[in-house]
Length: 86
Image (cartoon, rainbow, N blue to C red):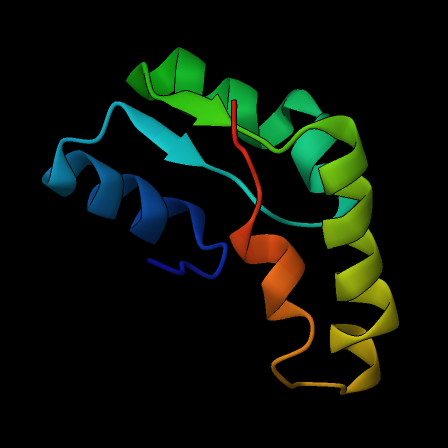
C-alpha cells in the first residue's frame, strides 16, 4: 500500500489495520533519520523497516534522478521490487 506522507492519516490507517511493522521508502534522509521511524516507534510501538544501505542509495537515486525529473515509467520499479527490508 502506498501512503503519501500525511502524518495524521498514516497513523490512523496503521492503527485501523493493527499493523505492528511497516516498511519505509523515501529519500535517503527520510529512510536514515529517526524523525519518522522514531515517531512511529515511540508513539505507536510500530517497528519501521528500511532497506539496506546500498538499496537506500538506489531508492534515493530513483527519486531524485527519475521521479523528480518526471521520468515515470516501469524501469525504476524493478530495483524497488527486489528490496529486502529489515
